[in-house]
Structures are given as structure tokens and as C-alpha cells.
Image 1 (spheres, rainbow, N blue to C red):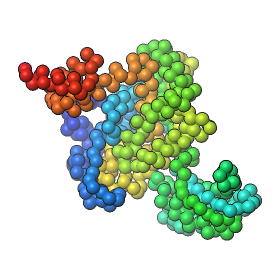
Image 2: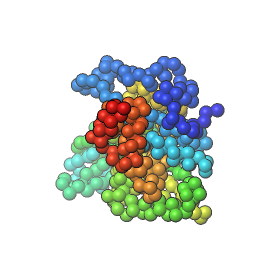
Image 3: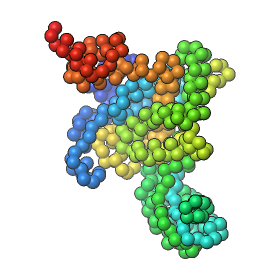
Length: 422
């Protein structure tokens, strides 16, 4: 039975951590080698992924441990340059396990493709004509992707909106709602939007301009919830402090931006590790945070009748297991194997759960000891490494800098010279 709960995982060597992840996920020797090989993405692969390639750029990949989501254990691969993120997620997930872990769900895998129709004098009249032809539009779109339809996907509905612009006046916007199943779906929905445009022009008498997906994927939401007992947090006053911090974010967009950045610290790192589109997920998340007309937190924190802390999160999660870097980048493929997810919906649920726990850990620290205390030791390690310290000397310098609250490269260099003389 796979158990993601570990004690002292961070104390293991890199090789030992890799061995644990490989055994947890049942990876092959080839996949294990890929994970530890900085050259797994070959120059030729890179050259076929993007244009004007001049090299490759590496970032650390770690795994967040202790995650129990819907009763299933997960190790979550994360690619990030920021210290404390993976440690905070692992610690928060461990606390969530005490009350059954995190529970997650999703609204499905429907993406929106938009068709902008201009030069329509009677936009409202044209809107009704589009809606009268919903089935014909859907049928023609589905003929463009018979494989998707055969698998159970395709256009499930057509909507039309009149959007007022202060620049050009009214425009008609047609939405194709497409179930893209386990793909993120950008290529599929864009192809449909482009292919159906002549028919839309015929119906409306207008001129189609843009034909492109929307990253505000309101029909592709992922949700998660978790409960933390007041005892494990150190008392009901800590619960109140966390709720007070959430209230700050709910009331003030300046704080909400940083609150949501903490959520995306986790989500973006896992999205990147699996080869999914970080920009698509981030734009969707921040747009959803503003959908009410003002920028709000993506998570909520409340106190239940027992005085325990309960948290929820809901955000668009346009991610997939088919296509893109997910199927090209060797390490991304191995990361998906470590996760062990079976569908794009499950993948989105894992990311939402991670975002909630990342947020819990950050707000808990902010509302109690302050961010610098926990962050300082990890930052000090980076500073000592930049100064050139290694091994036991590095650890000694880190301890000195943290205890003296002088975490600076120049001071690390002074200490290094001091230790080298001994």
C-alpha cells in the first residue's frame, strides 16, 4: 500500500529521496534515471519545443510529501526556485491528515472558445439567431474532431453574448463549450472556433475577428476543502488569527494579491513539473479571483462549531495529461507517473488541494511567528552557498547567520574565511 506520510524526509540524501519516490510510484529504472539527469531534455528535444533555442535552463524538482486527497496518498512533484515552498506544503499536508486529509472535486473538463463577431447592426437579434442554430453549430464543430467525439468529448453547448465596448460599441461573442476530456484542449477548441467562423458569419451577417480559447475556464473548476483542529494549531486563538488574516485579504486587494500568490506558489510549481501551462492556470486563477468585479482571495477560512479551522478553495484548472510538454518533456512524463493520476480532472483536484494547503501553511506562519523565522534558515543556505561554503562549513555558517540574524552574502564570506583559517 502506498503511503505518502514521511517523517524526516528532508533529512534523507537526494539519492535516498529519489529512491523513495521511485518505489512509491513504481517507476522503472529508466524513469528514475530521467529524474536525476539534468540532460534528460536533450538539445534536439528543446529545439523542437520552442523557437531560437540556445540552451536549456534547469530548476530544482522536489516532492511534497504527506498528501492524502480523497483517501488516496500522493507525492506531488514541484519545480520551483523558491525556498520553503515544498517544506511548507509537506508540513501543512501532514497537519491535514489528522482530520482525514484534503477532500477535492471538480466541475468537469469543459473549455470555452470565443468567437468575436463585429459589424453586426442588430447584435441582440443576431444573438438569438445563433442560439436557434446551436445544434447545427455543435454538429459542424464535432465533425472537425471525430476522435474527441468518439472518446466522449466535443461541443456540449453553444452560448452567445452581446458585449458592450466603449471603443467600438456592441459586439457579439459566441462561446463554444467543448468537453476536452484529458487534454487541456487549446488546439481542439481553437480549431473548432476557426472552422465554424464562416457559418457564424452566414448566420449573423457579421465579420468574425478573433477566434481563441478563454483561460477563464469557469466550467473547469477544481475545488478542495480541509479541516484543522484547534488543538493541532496551538489553540483557538491561532484559528482566530488565521481568520483575521483571511479577512484582511478578503477586504484588501493589495493583501489578496499576495494571499493568492502564496496559493500559486504551490500550484504553479506542480503545474510546471508536469509540463502543463503555468501561464494558462495563473491567468485563469487571477481572472477568477476578480470575477465579482473586485480582486478577492481564491480560498476561504472559517471557524466551525467546534472552534476548528476549515478552509476551501475553488479556481479554474485548465490542465491535461494529453499533448504539449506533458508528453514531450521526459521529466514531466516521470512527474506525472509519480503523481499517479488517471484523468485531467483528478490532476486538477490535486493541484487545488496543494494550493489550499500551501495557503494554509503561509497564512498560519504569517499570523503567528511571521514569515521570516521559518524562511530565514532556508534563505541562509542559499546565501552560504553563494558565498562558496560547502558541507559542514555551510551548515555552521547557516547556524551562525540565523542565530545572529545577519543573513547576508558578505557576512557569509567573512565567516567562510574565518572557518577556512581553522
